Image (tube, one colour):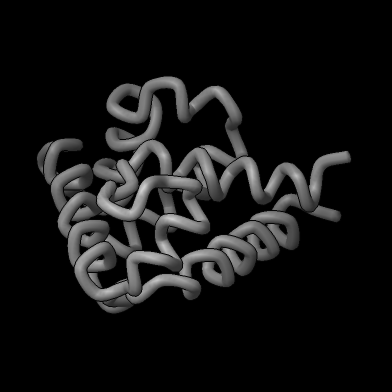
Length: 121
């Protein structure tokens, strides 16, 4: 599979995983979250330090002044998803107690692992 086809397949996988939750799909935060997950799938070491390895790349691509605005937008998106998605769906998918909101890193890590389990042999 060539690089462009592979990246398209990765993006489709991410979309399929995220559609299990009630995200506001038109927001910057959702777009940035998908991009962050994609970067972490492509570069497995990126997830070790999102602040250094992921947010600055996304900020540069979108002409944002600071990587902190990227993180903030994603965090707001996650909070909205958490408030709008049935808690049992969230707790089952992320293997969390029902009173815990998944962190940004846990969301990315879980989806990256899911991708690797299905596509990397």
